[in-house]
Length: 78
Image (cartoon, rainbow, N blue to C red; front, side):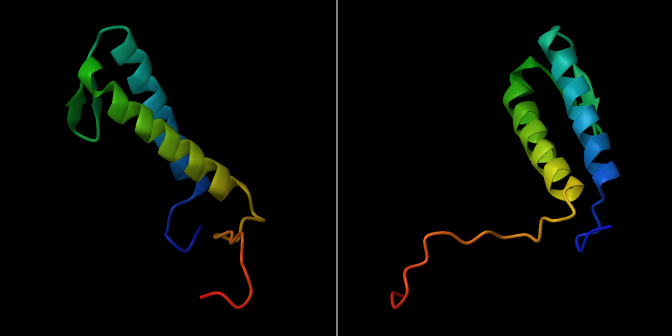
């Protein structure tokens, strides 16, 4: 389990839900996610959900991921 309480298994389950919703919406059907009905008009929201949960699956599936990456530090500049 992570500091946030989110596990890799939780991420994978949510990702499966969003992928199933995408499939249904693309077939012209409505789908229910967490009590809200989504339709073809919500495809953008579904795709954002897929991106979010894919990223979380990568993050929580990589035990070497310590969090933030800092790049382009210039000494003496604040």
